Image (tube, rainbow, N blue to C red):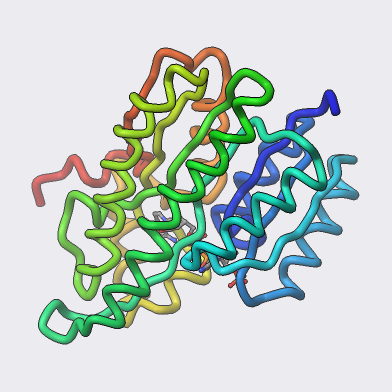
Length: 251
Ligand SMILES: NC(=O)c1ccc[n+]([C@@H]2O[C@H](COP(=O)([O-])OP(=O)(O)OC[C@H]3O[C@@H](n4cnc5c(N)ncnc54)[C@H](OP(=O)(O)O)[C@@H]3O)[C@@H](O)[C@H]2O)c1
């Protein structure tokens, strides 16, 4: 019961997995949520357990569904009895131009990316209260503040993530819970396969980045971890952009 526990939604692939590994490397037991790809989840569990000697509990749940959120957190409570860190990383979304967005596309995207964050954070706070507090990090993207092709539904959901982060930071502060978000420039994960202009995005992210390279999953993981340490305890409700300075460029 002494070991700290971190829950990462969508923690079995891409950026979520890098975040999970960072916490495992620092001794956290993990609950990793996924939605569809059980074999990738199983591979992540085995690799992390053998590399870091921590426990990894997998939970299949679509965080866009309220009842599945409740089941996810019930498993956290039943398995570990505590929660110290919650990383709201899972995301999905329909990539279409604004004029082609239908109601079902909008609802799917907002439910998984924005609504889930609020209701997961409620459940996380209830568990964290039992041990006197914890930390929550939302994962956002540059599309929250910049326009990207085909990204309207996701971009708006990420703007909501950043707004929810600010409200959580204030309203959960009395419970001893620190809340912030990390936002990234393009990262070469499976998610980019859904972008019709993937090659162009990657080329720009590499060539034009003032830092001289593309953002890697571990870059976001380092900052997400830092935001959950005592050194960051007076940072509240902020979205830290991890993009090597790319979005600073006017053109
Ligand atoms: N890639 C980028 O360029 C980039 C840049 C900035 C920010 N981000 C953000 O970083 C986060 C992770 O992105 P990524 O690129 O690592 O994505 P990814 O490689 O596509 O992985 C997505 C993960 O989320 C899970 N997931 C998807 N929908 C879910 C749902 N409804 N319920 C529960 N789990 C779900 C997936 O589970 P399955 O394996 O079962 O499908 C998978 O584990 C997202 O919030 C994304 O917006 C990404």
